[in-house]
Length: 67
Figure 1: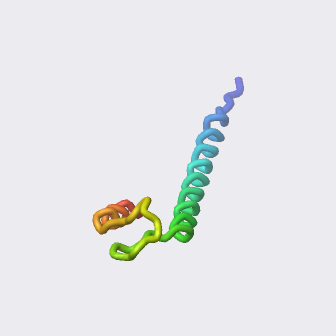
Figure 2: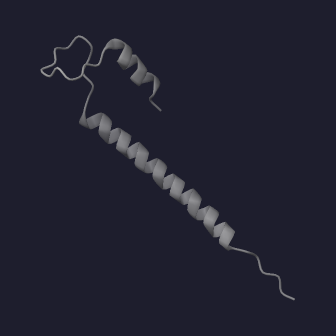
Figure 3: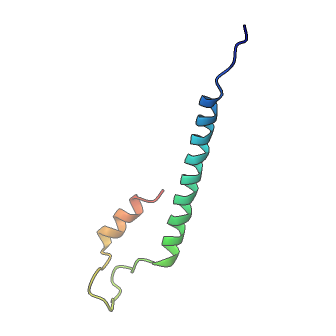
């Protein structure tokens, strides 16, 4: 009687690990592009738009969320 090892579970775990690494790389790349594309206005700078201003407490929050 031959015993066969189930390899489908190993292949699944390998694929899940590689997929997770790919997602992590995509998130890091997207985060870096977002930082370069739209810099946050410094507190105290005059803005030509009236929609959004980054106040000092918002900038402090942004710094706490950096990875």
